[in-house]
Amino acid sequence: MIRHARVLPVLVLAPLLLTACGSEEAGDPGPSASASAAGPAADPGTGELASRAQAMGVAPELVYVTEAPGFTLAQQSVGVLGDDGFSATWVDGETNALLRLAVDRGTITADTCPEQPVGDMSGEHTTCERDGSAWYRTGAGRHEYALPEEGHVVRVSAETDAVPRDVLRAAALAAHRPDAAETDRLLPSAEPAPATPVERGDLPPYGDGAPDNHVDVGG
Image (cartoon, rainbow, N blue to C red):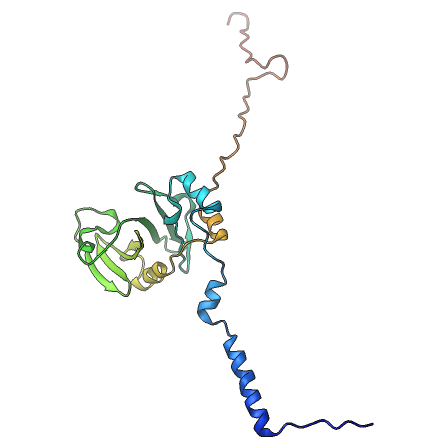
């Protein structure tokens, strides 16, 4: 027996097509969703981030990471700032320009901003300009973006003539708490490096291994 396919009327089919298209658009992750796909930030109080930061003397909640096109982390620059703050520097491989990330306890307001020197250069005049939720600050040949957070301030600074303001701003806005993979690249291991035995060339291969202090005749 031949079955005849039923054809939906156009008036019924059209809403179904519109619903399907709307569902597809709703599934588009968008910029914010794709950014969060990089992975959740590590919990500052537990796990590898906490153990590595505490081994350095850094408060885990003050560890941040950033990124900027052309800049790579200078691993030897990662260290403690002040009592338990954090700092690290990124280097441009072509120009050798430096981006410094510094996170320390405290706050910054319209009243206190001019009193806080840029790049720890005390005695220099500091100018402050509000830029969204951040402060753009200049002084002593350097400029800086300072972002107030709860109980601490995240700062990204550079020499004024080495790093353009838009690059500095983008790096400051990109500062965030590291995820597990970023923690592994950013912070040194909490485990001490295994000691490498020192080989002495004056030890004989026999006996108790005491140095050979034999003196020749007439010696």
